[in-house]
Length: 241
Image (cartoon, rainbow, N blue to C red; front, side):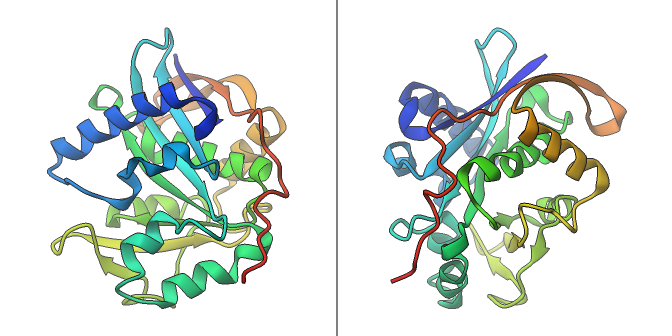
């Protein structure tokens, strides 16, 4: 069994620190020294929500992701990553502020759970489940070529209005990243039937233990606690200035 819990970053700085250390180890292992989503400033930002994967006894952090809500003040990680290359990135985020928007970012998993789908299935699923509590009608992500394909299972579509048909060289000149967007978090019209069913179920029952089907048809028992103590679905309905 693994545990997946969600919380606002400012509600639990100690768990944020465990998230940061685990994420940093993975980035160092693949030779990436700096990505905007790995900045530690989000720890003190109440617009940041953390999804943490832990071992059943909570002794080991196995992965994580963040949902960064756009608050009209702090740029989303993808704005910092790609905005200087194309100013239309800023305009794109601004367009969706009034109904609540944000970004799935900082997604990682440890080698201990590699191949289980922690990063490629369950963290994205949890992020979209959380969007209802936070009040985000749309969601962005900045993906590698591999995760761009995976994001399609959740209804994320390439946002071709920016960059080179949505693509940017990031975080290094030899690496390609693509901005994708889920434009209807509420209904998930382009997501797969399986993902839509599981996300809706997690919204209805954010605290549950489920037998999940992972990659290669492996069964994984997951103890979810996605109930946010301080969620306000109207908090991030921002009128752009």
